[in-house]
Image 1 (cartoon, one colour):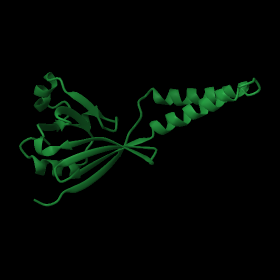
Image 2 (cartoon, rainbow, N blue to C red):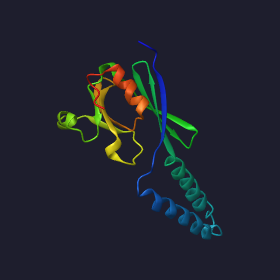
Image 3 (cartoon, rainbow, N blue to C red):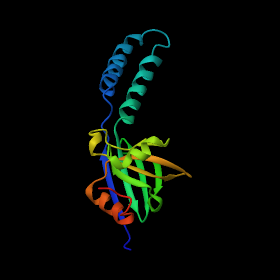
Image 4 (cartoon, rainbow, N blue to C red):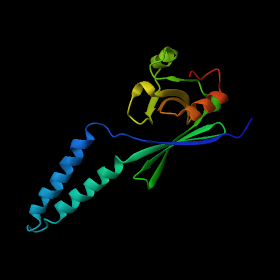
Length: 163
């Protein structure tokens, strides 16, 4: 079998509550400047500014899917600078991969798996669900794979992948 090495990066859209949260943090940061003239009042604006920066960085995220041989690795990249490994999934022991809402997934919905959402949070009907082992337990993974990634996962386990 050929060596498979594929990477895909997707931009994550933040949840709907994040926009008002960002605006609220900016307003609180500006309003907290009124407390500068009070003793120890400088700590409040500095704290709000730091919290605002952290919120902006946290919700500026991407997921990177890396398929190398028979392992799918998912990393979360925050602010294009910090990388965190979300999981490594062994696709040679893949149980099923199907589009979200597919009839093929009804059996797995009844079972109690941990679910990890590594999708772009755009359109849930275009996402795919994988059930695979991770750290000695079966997990349900929600992804937004492109055509190349889907085809190569299908090559690894054609009887378990439903495109």
